[in-house]
Image 1 (cartoon, each protein chain N blue to C red):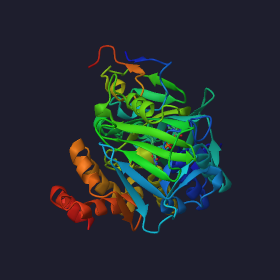
Image 2: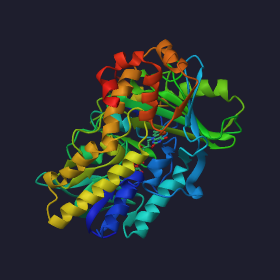
Image 3: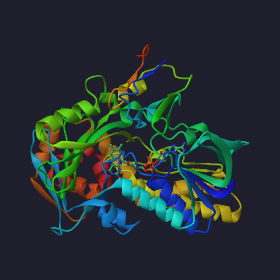
Image 4: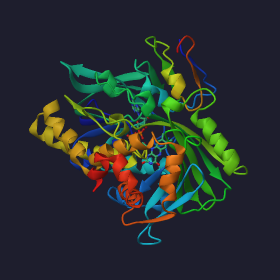
Length: 58
Length: 398
Ligand SMILES: Cc1cc2nc3c(=O)[nH]c(=O)nc-3n(C[C@H](O)[C@H](O)[C@H](O)COP(=O)(O)OP(=O)(O)OC[C@H]3O[C@@H](n4cnc5c(N)ncnc54)[C@H](O)[C@@H]3O)c2cc1C
């Protein structure tokens, strides 16, 4: 599963817009990751600050 | 908040606020829901807007204007500066807003026009009936209520989920998300009345870096790079830090902002049965500049107008709402998106030396009208070679 480094995340929603599975959602200041996340790593790539880590992804 | 409305707007950014205000002014029973506890915060924006564009919706008010612009400048990868000024020297061409207050003012006006407003209220699912959108489930402090409406307007921004839940693919391609970071800086040497854009593959790959003044010695200093160029050690924040260390080593950062902005083509279709999609959620940002405040307000007002007509006729089917989709595509805004998408696609492929060449062609351009279209036309005029390279695109600009 995707790891969210909550101390780094600025809950901006950039990642939500590129998620092909619709697995991410911004709940005010909290980024939630749903079960359907495939760990593809797209969100981790685009994150402006590097708050996301796909552990088995590309 | 009641349980049934004519129009339910999801999202309280500029698009949603203007949609709710316009709908309420048309006499429609309107509700706007915003998931954040405060409208306008945190800011995800460089806050620049053209003067004409702003005036189309609201009279400028010092309460939410940080600075007035009289010109702009572009800095080539090699550091050469090209100054852009209005043909009417010294006249105001644009503003840098204070979006915390601007967004709030717009929602305030929607409320004054009669719309109900609910903050810290998040749409968590659509209410669907035979494929048609009939409302939304709204969560507030752990309690979920159902709100139905004739027309639902999705204004939920770049992180939009609502249309996706209704079966519309809104995913932004990786190379077409601008991954952005910005500092609000103070105690820095700037030209307080000119926005500056820095280009170059070392500075901001497939994007640009900006300095948008917010006062005599303060500015939004930010950057957007293509998601494709982003990765460990070379993210938007890394490029921004590099620039700031070099350019404003003694500046003080008083706000840390990040965000994404789409520079893809708009959604293939921005309506469905009972649903209209506006603003960033519809991906109607200007792909060349990344500007979306005006486009959000424009699509917001138009959506409310078409919704009012459809509701009056008692038909809110996709077909009945389609005039909205057709009208924004045919508008000046829709055409600008189309044209600027192609110009962006051309520009991101150019090497630094090519960008230097283009910018070397003039150290100062006077623009009859302060717009990207006028700028591109002027650049082509001083760089006749571009006509050939741009081909049909150049011809379409005449
Ligand atoms: C770094 C950066 C710089 C930018 N600079 C500029 C600029 O200088 N000029 C310019 O014109 N544009 C700029 N933009 C783009 C501009 O910020 C957006 O285009 C604009 O905010 C879009 O308005 P909107 O109303 O469509 O969406 P937003 O302003 O994003 O508003 C959407 C709202 O919907 C809410 N929402 C989302 N989901 C839900 C839900 N499920 N339920 C309830 N509420 C929900 C969100 O909380 C948000 O408040 C920039 C963007 C970025 C990231």
